[in-house]
Structure formats: C-alpha cells, structure tokens
Image (cartoon, rainbow, N blue to C red):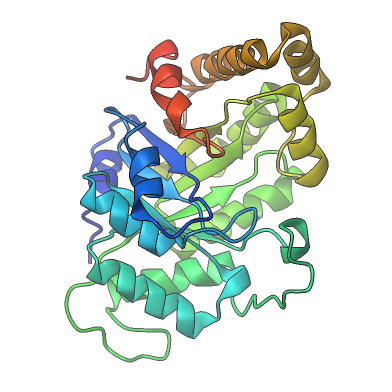
Length: 302
C-alpha cells in the first residue's frame, strides 16, 4: 500500500514541510493534550507525539487519537525499548484502526536516563528491524510471522538521525540501513552546531539518501542556559556549543533567556532551511508547544 497521509502526500509532491513535537504530560485527562494542541496553529503539517522520552507520560497512541480528533495530523512514535515485536505490531495496528497514518520508529533512550534504572528493557527488535516490519505490513499486508492483515494497512514510516554521531561513515551506514528498510522520511536530532551538521548533510547527499527519503532538519528553542547545560550533560544527542550556552547566560533573566533561545533557533532555521537536501523543518518543542507559532513566524515558516 502506498502511504496516503497528508504528510506523505506533501513529501511526495515535493512540498517543503514543517512538523512539530508534542510532549505528552503526566496526566489522565485529554484536556492536557488538547491544550497543547491548540498552540500549533496553522502551517504545521503533522505533529509528532513523543513516546515516554524522558519518563512515563500519557501514551503516544492515546495522545495521537486526541490530536486527530482535534483536527491535527499525528505522527505516532514507538520506541522498541519498552515493547517486543508482538506489542509493537499490535499497537501499530491499533493506530491504523484509529486512522493514524504516520509512524516514527525509534530505539529510545536507555531507561537509566529517564528515571527508571530498575526497569527491565526489552529491545526485542531495534529501530531498523521495526521499520522493516512496518514496511512489510505496508507492502505485503502481513505481520512479521506471515499472518495476513485484514483491511488496507497504510503507514508512512519515519526514522531519526543523529547528525553528530561519529565516525561519519558508520553514521551514514546506519542511516542507509533505515532507508533500505523502508523509512520514507528522516527527522534529525536538534541542530545547534551547524558545521558538523553541514558535514553530515554533505555525506548524506553523497550517499543519495535525499532521493529516497525526505530529510527534515530538527531544531529546538531553548528556554534557558540551565536547560541547555542539562540536555547536553545527560543526552549525547544534544551537541550544544559553549558559545550558545554563554549567549543564553548573557541574555539576563528567565524571560530574556527564553527570548534569546527563540532568536538562536530562528537563526539556525534561517541557515538550514535553504540547504540542498533539506525537505522540511521539524520543531522539537521539548514541551514548549506554545512557542511554536512565534518561532515559525520569526523564521518565515508560517
């Protein structure tokens, strides 16, 4: 089956797209999701719903259903850290049953980084194997064990890339595996240091990846110097230069630092969005959904 989501159609026809992220809260009310959803406004093609990235929250699947009901196109995120192949396929079928047509496959942060060091990990399959499994469900309309899927299953399959992972040849090799497995769009981790990102992008283009999968450059508006330091100290994916941290500190109080974080993010978007090989921008809100419209307006993405 050919993916038929709004995101898939726009990427197929060559449109430059903007996607954003919604970070579910620790709550049992759909009003929490709806409140965050109202912040996005127009211009965002699809909204990723994070899957317990920093600890337990409302499930991505449930939040996606609420988003869809609110009129936004969701991107369902699934990490293999917490599920075996049986649960993954069941949840994805459930998503399709609810009319969700976009899926982002991730391995997920180790549980020791998200406040649950005592939790048993699963990692039955990794993100590449998950992408391959969902692609088989798309193309063959069967599960991993060969059982047929009733009804038409159609899911746009995405993956994540870390532009800062080195050595670069191994980074590109991992990305190519995801694309060969069936990923049709790639959302990168947040970009803060442009030089290594451009180096990565040149290698990606040399490998012919943009002809097979749309590259969406990830950006993240920082709220404070403290947030920047905490992110880069805890997660290796956040490569935030000292110059940005110092610039945030020099901005002044909390309100000034938040404003400076938006300005920095705007500058990064302006430099990245016209690079050859980039098909869109992915805004990682980090739970700051309310800043997305302002950021889009200042960066000319509205």
